[in-house]
Length: 293
Image 1 (cartoon, rainbow, N blue to C red):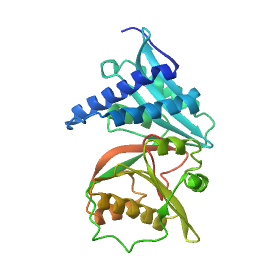
Image 2: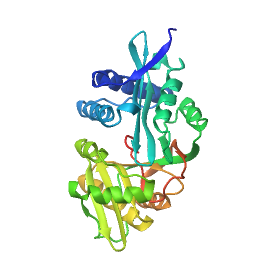
Image 3: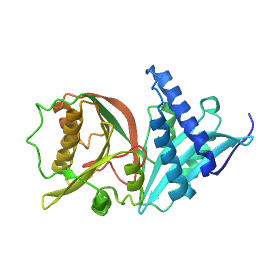
Image 4: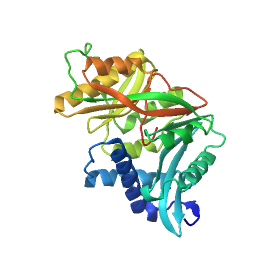
């Protein structure tokens, strides 16, 4: 096979890197025996927004791997204040085990030099898990939950939770600095652009926020477990009221408040790919975003 080379990703690469992302995760699903997911125009547009966002806001953390000038993989990494995170690393199925993934990971890791903390959300692919575990990160197992939430087991509705808006992004950044070591800054714009609904708590008892999209808890951060649980229950209530399915991803042992809520709502809890942290352990009142960590 010809040599793999890297170069900075550009806006002109987005269509190809989105296609590679879809193909790579479809291949992983087939290996696990999962039912193939129908790819909708809405999903494609959200993926394009994500890739474009990194090219614009993290141009030094966005890379493509090529073989004979053909794009065969990409890596998207972010730097937000003291935090580095890997948003995406994918290689075309026919090119996996070519060394492209390792080169992309090394380039993405170099973008995080000097950051106090690093985080990677991994798929269940054993090759990815090994790569991250041998790159200076500590592994933490995760579970995910899904299903139609039952509200009979919920606690008394916490009326501190209100609908959020763009005016709450400064509050959210303050919470994130305390919880994960960095605000999100421009990431709020793209999270809103992909259709996420924001919920907020801000009073003397606690502060926090969550984004909910298509029944999925897209991310959540709070000053304490009770506030985090209140936000999660508000998300589950919304999903219940709209008659859709709920998903709550990226739950570690540190998020027992989330485990308890998911079981009380009678969601199905199953093992998921691990999370990796460097310079920190998983924050307790926190559920990361797969795309923006």
